[in-house]
Length: 154
Image 1: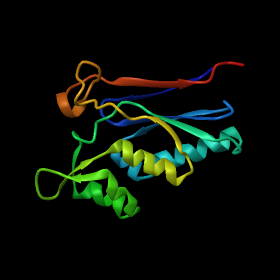
Image 2: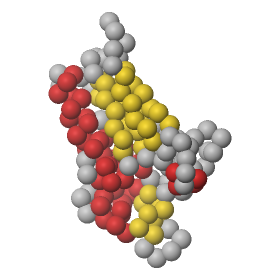
Image 3: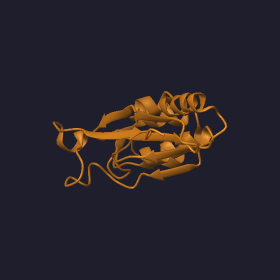
Image 4: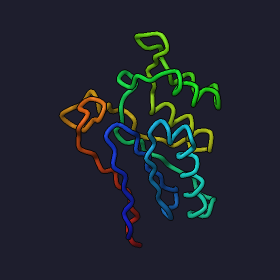
């Protein structure tokens, strides 16, 4: 079989499969890619490969957490101008024009928009767990984590 992989250090890896075990997919969902629809396009591609009649499941791998991901107004607008519901994924930051963004919540919102409600994962923070994860934001120069998904041969 073929193994799909993404390398991340704070961005969100999103692994996808269908309920009938016919296809898998993986997305590297940093804020820019997520705002541009990488999750939605990945789900569409998975459904096309799986045949479209199966439920899609998602797993959210380790990423920067909502208390560590400080962003500017540009990131808030990139999501909220398109979907006002995304405002729930932002909390006011320490300074004017700064926000804390919750990538996990944004991913769940985006997945929900394309009918994916079975979502697991999303409880880690790469910045706050240095003993477990690499973090570019925390360390500047850092390694990367590999997230993998594959189908077992039948």
